[in-house]
Image (cartoon, rainbow, N blue to C red; front, side, top):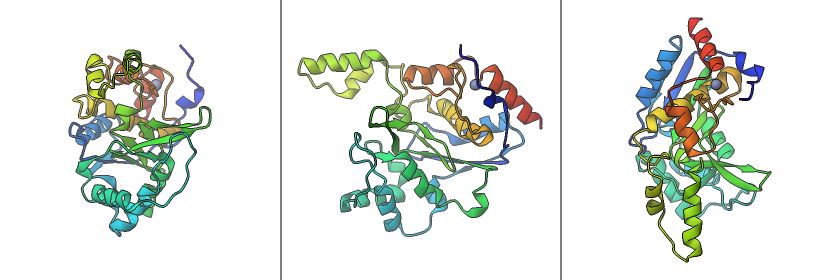
Length: 277
Ligand SMILES: [Zn+2]
């Protein structure tokens, strides 16, 4: 196993407050349980559960915000981000989602950084501090453009102030077991267009699905990645058994978040040091 870079062991900033924002469309996400988990690990931190990020922070014009969010949509996944004027229907869709976040969405891809900046503007100055972690769950699927292969990739988490964590990204971003894609390819070659649901049945249990009963447990790890981003500026770990592991495959997500071990030795001792302070 790769040796951990020494940066992991330096706690540069210990947050005092953690704010967790609910995604009401994710039926199996129990944010209060995630808060209890963080309180257990870091008894010195105040952890507060809030409703969804936009409803909590925003009291301006819904039309204006809908337009801003619609502008962060990715039009073509193989092109770098380009600004465009959203269509009326797109803005109406965003208005609906702002008013009723419990409806949720998963089919649209947003540019992660731009979406994050729209949300960041809403944090009041007194809460925009390195000592305050904001982890916002959202149903919106977001991604970043990768210059290496010239396309957008969906992501589960984008760390920052706030960190955003996608409940659809956790389903769509990490790759499913290889058989899934082989099966799909094979059926397509035969000219059969098999619905995703049928293919999913073949790999049942080996990936996290929408409204999966394991959603809360898995999201505990991603919330900690947001927290570690604030502490060390390095949210991820190289150890595939550690909850801070940056999983690229669904099976890695399940192994790192649901395995017997919670943290690698280095992160476990860092958590102990912080909680003893
Ligand atoms: Zn670790």
